[in-house]
View 1: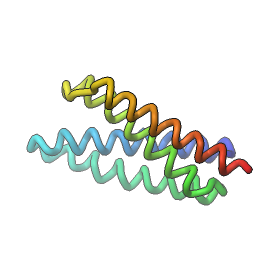
View 2: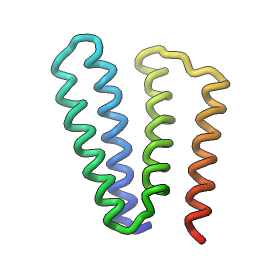
View 3: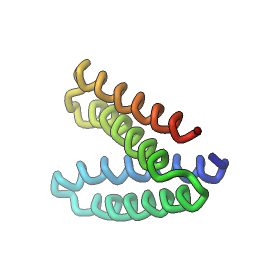
View 4: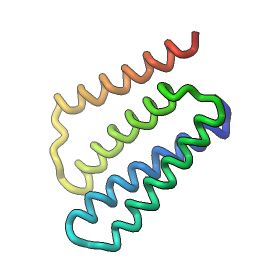
Length: 109
């Protein structure tokens, strides 16, 4: 993975998590958060397309993006919104990350 792909993938993850947290805030009726939702998702998919243009396989790029997004969003939802994050949910997050690592290792061959 090139440096540009890694930077863009990181930006895509941050943008997607920001958009998802903004979506949670927008659901409370505060319409200004919808700007963060739209801008975040558009930027996230734009950065993800750059990652793919850099030659990263879609299974690897999307897997890392989705797994990181799920894990970070779950942690932030616990911190900011006091939503549950049980040990079973944490185990599920670990399994998701492990699955993505296996996909990346398999793609290296």
